[in-house]
Length: 215
Length: 215
Image (cartoon, rainbow over all chains, first blue to last red; front, side, top):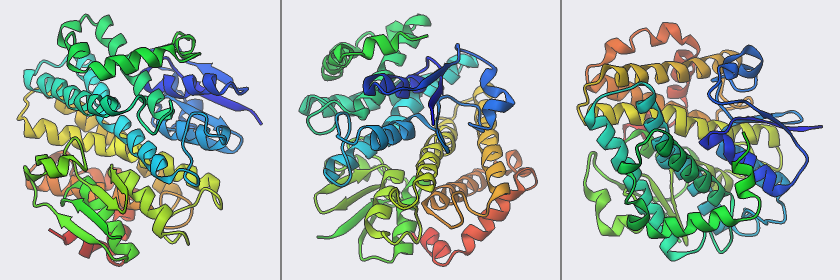
C-alpha cells in the first residue's frame, strides 16, 4: 500500500506536500509542472473529477481538497499530535483547528483564487479589483489580531493550520511579486506586524523552506 | 449550558439551522434579519472576528464556519450516525464527507459568494461574469456526475453533505430568482438532471422545508 500525492507547486498544492515532508513518512510524489493541462487528462479526472490539485491516494482512499488532506494526514500519521490537535484529547483546540482550516479555504485561499482568476482573465473592472483587495485586507486583519494573542494559530504549538496559512501567504507573496503588483501590498508588514513576525518563524521551521522550493 | 446559534437566512447561515432542526435538540436561535449591519457590532465580533454568519456557541466553544459547525454537531449530537459518518466506524465514508464539505465551501459556496459580490458591487466586466457562470457549470457538472451514481452524496444515506449542498442550491435558486437572472440558469434542470432529481428529494426530507422557511 503506497501513499501517493498528486500535486503542483501552487498555494493549495504545496500544503500537503509540506506536511508530508515534515511528517517524514514514505510516499510517492507526482509533481505536475505548473501551469499544466495534464490535470484535465482522463486518468487524473478519475481521481479528481474537476481536475484540481492536490489529490492524495492512500490504499482505497482517494482524497482531493488540500485542507481535508491535511486533516487526514494528521489523523492517520500524526497520532502523537506533533503537528495537530486530536478530538479525543483536546476537543476545544481540535474545533479551533477545524474552524481555521475552513476559514483558510474560504476567506484566504478563496480570495487568492479570485485574485488569480481576475488576473488570469485580464479583467478590467476597478470595482472587482478593489473588492478583492478589501477581502485580503479583511482576512489579514482577522489573522493579525489572532497572532497578536498567540505565537501560532491554535493552542501553543505549530499545527496544520500554520501550514495552511503559511503556504497560502507564501503563495500570495510569490504571485504578487511575479506579476509586479507589490505596490498594492507593500504596507502589509507594517499594517499586519504579527502576521509578518509569525511568517518569519514559519519559514524557520525545519524542513519548510526545502519543501516550498520543490518544483 | 445552552447551545446557541447566531445566524441569518443566507446560504451558509441556513446550513446549521437546518441541521439543528433535523437533530431536534434544544437550542436558542439568534436569527439576524438579512441583510444587517448588526453582525459588525462589537459583541458579535467577539464571537466571529470578521462579522460573518453563522456562529455556534456551546458552553466554552465558540465556533464560526458553517461546515465546521455541521461537522461539530454531527460529532457531538449525532453519535448514532443518523445524518453522518463517523471516523472510527466508517473511515472511507468519513473522509468523503470531509472532502465534500471542503469542496462545497470552496467550489460551490465560493462561487455563490463571487456571484453575490459581483452583483452587490454592480461590477460590469463581462469576463468576470462569464467566469463566474463557468465556475457554476464546472461545479454542477461534478456534482451531477456524482449524483448519477448514488442517491445521496456519501454512502447510502442522507448526510450533512446533502444539507450543505442542498441549502446552497436552494440559496442559488433564491438569489437568481430575486435578481431576475433566471435566464442564465434555466437549462440547469436538463443539463444536470441528477442534481434536479436529488434536490427534489432533498426538499422532501421531513423538516427541511420548514427550516428553510425560517426568517
